[in-house]
Image 1 (cartoon, helix red, strand yellow):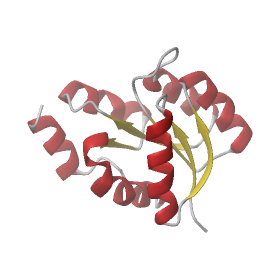
Image 2 (tube, one colour):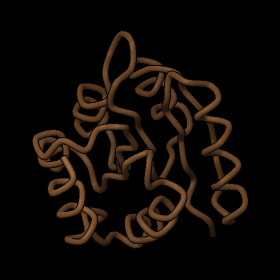
Image 3 (cartoon, one colour):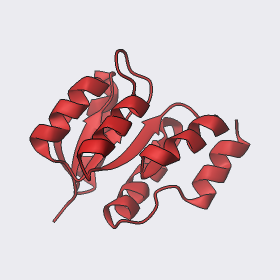
Image 4 (cartoon, rainbow, N blue to C red):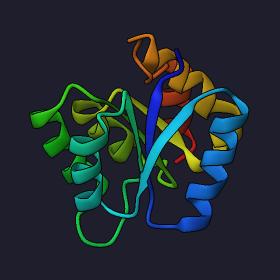
Length: 135
């Protein structure tokens, strides 16, 4: 059974592109949200296995939403963001199961989601060190 994924990004074109990539790789997108507050509501309603969550969004940001989701649900969280700053990557570890830079999503998103779906840490040493060293 494919992991059920909720896509959360304020950019509708990004959500569409991510959905297409996930559909091509046999993941089941159970819903979409455009901000952190809507993400919390959708998680309660849809009970996804994984929330793919942008960090920078208007209103409630992804980190705040992830922290609140973690308090209420066992849903796994993977951040997808344009940020590559060391502090951003490291700061997300406490409230997520993985991190993928949007610039690397074409090659890293699917492997990260597979690892997270299997309950393996989505913060690979290679990915984390590359994001930290390229900032």
